[in-house]
Length: 219
Image (cartoon, rainbow, N blue to C red):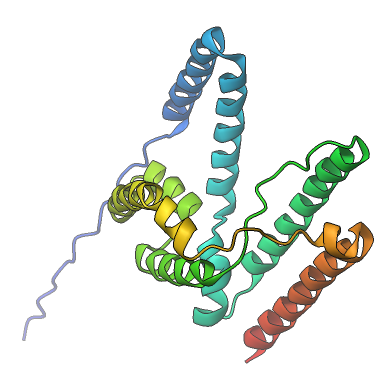
């Protein structure tokens, strides 16, 4: 008997295209657009710079508010959850400093102090379902649109439609469901107790998230 040998053709690996030229070209376009915007509005150019920097940070860190709430349930990972808690804590320091400086100057406290009501529950539920279906929150959707994901492009279209629809009917929601005045904790219990409660809750959430993530990883 003669043995018939069959040769399996080897898969030829495609040569990876260098992304460096594209990155350089994109960087030149970003700088050029910023320079063009600065000629008409320096403030807009500053916002452009911060927007590009935040977008780059989001893309490299894969930061997503939806994933911070979804991952503990689906995968048990809480790294993004802890990241969101830290981000809120840092933002709280900045907002508290700005608002307290306004109090010392006897001027109106800046910021939109919105009341909590049934509209918060309805909106959070609808937005949460939409985020899970779309696979990302607003920031995550914008980030993945820049990466070329078709699913997120479709989600962005309906995100814009929903936002415009909500803005159109905001007056009805405001008059029907929203309380007329919100509660600003520093005005009710004082600045020090309010900050203790704020950072105490954030610390408790962080500790619980860390414990939950470690427990899931050891199972």
